Length: 140
Image 1 (cartoon, rainbow, N blue to C red):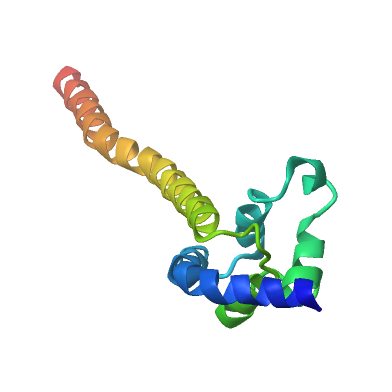
Image 2: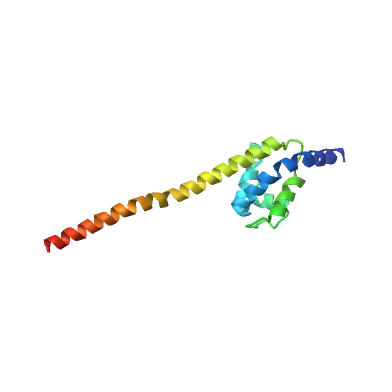
């Protein structure tokens, strides 16, 4: 009972400091279970990472079906809050959340980069094609 009370008291102090960043992460990934699990997994001790998979995260932490593809915001927040312990500090959680957000930003930038390169190359390719067509007309 004392251990449970200590966990609840810790969560009561820490959770308000991490709620907004967690909400921002959830919004950014649109509740995607795999991405939320990736954030969670980043905080697991190395020795349990391969044993605690996404399905266990869904069932044991989030209390949703193991194959869920989306986790609602309220379920995500309460799942994290209800499973916090004394080792979960605001600094640790916010740092993991910031890293996940940065990785997602980097991921979306790299997805956008080929389109930007392609749009820069498109006018040059069109010019080259036009020059080729003009040359063909000149020789005809």
